[in-house]
Length: 316
Image 1 (cartoon, rainbow, N blue to C red):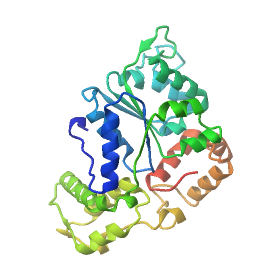
Image 2: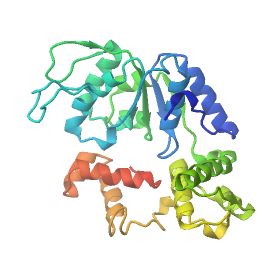
Image 3: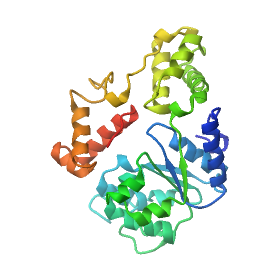
Image 4: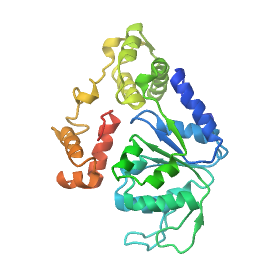
């Protein structure tokens, strides 16, 4: 992705306001917190902030904290020296160092274990790190952007997120508005994805009929922009017409009721989705306890949760 040419689609006043705040925040070197539902485009906003900032010519590095097993997050963030632990056969430069003179996006920051949050806070305050097994201190010059789809303040109250870290990253909060609350973006975004995927498929760019525009605008998009891109991509693979009609657009039912979602093969089997959600509620969202009760590894659970989030299901 070329950060120097990133301008997110923003026709709706709500998204214009978000971009305006993002542009102003980009001028500061303070840590930013992007908050918003899954699939809403937080990483795109982070790229936009990077492109408007003084470090736009530096690297943009992104890490999804939810996708990493707890025992590897520290090594991947801070790096490690050869021999630091059993499988460390080479030195690894961590994400903070990779983002030197650029921007580091810590996506799903709420998933960083409590035990590691104190170390992360120190790095944000001191602007320096030590690799695992290392003896020297490395100065860090990177703009940090944190992102979450959780209410971090609620997690602080539950004792699942450190209050000092919360206040450290909450300097400039930016709310990324869900797609259903910015209806004027729906058609421009649809047309953008139609063109993008038509080009990738090497076919002519079809037009939306009035009926199909209406159908897209009336839908609540529980999975936000990510769901829209998936819908459009599937549509262009399955049809080859010059005009897209409303009957050709397949939308899932309201995700909150867990109806109409096909977990059968590609996502989750049987009633596993409901089981995971019920168990997360029972354990107050504790991933470790949920994994134990479901007799699966935390990594497997994170992967399954990630799948559920990607189709717009709200996770406790």
